[in-house]
Length: 200
Ligand SMILES: N[C@@H](CCC(=O)N[C@@H](CS)C(=O)NCC(=O)O)C(=O)O
Image (cartoon, rainbow, N blue to C red; front, side):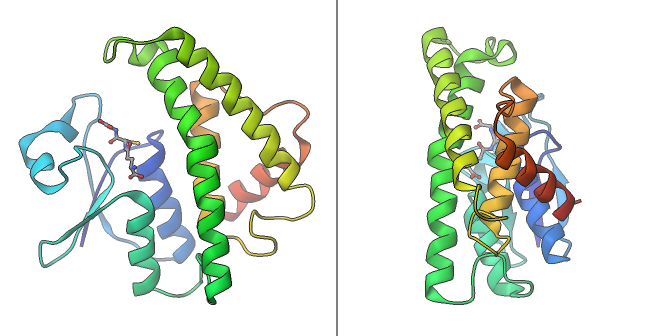
């Protein structure tokens, strides 16, 4: 098995690395340089037509792309410790939180990265108003997650799950591009410390 990947701070490859670490398993990684646009090379696009990382190349040549799909596959191959769930309810609950993280927070963070950050200005015809609106939306969602974490250690209550890993990678990437945790989001800040320690 070969994990096609990219170094930090790329948030999606990092999510798989954090997941592997929490599982206590290792998979050979092949790094591509995003800066050198290696993810758009013929070799990579032939394997993953999206031209993105991460993706997992199985020994028989089949490919699984999309971060959560990769993690699902690895979770089934290595069920311990369970990071998605052991019952239909737990699996659905984890999935619910992953979707909230990806669509609620991941989308505006990604839009800010594309339309509001100087680094990507040379790659895309930016719409600055979209970048600004996305930043406001991301800050609002961070506030929402803060409220959700007021009563429990993890997104899915007592269970540390792939949803927490997804949130951690996006929160850290958001911080790196200039969207910090709100100063008054104490529950989210406590969660961030717990999640960082849990995946260290
Ligand atoms: N939906 C994909 C997103 C993957 C993604 O956007 N990866 C980034 C690196 S963090 C990438 O390859 N970006 C280059 C591009 O989209 O062209 C997933 O969850 O795996």
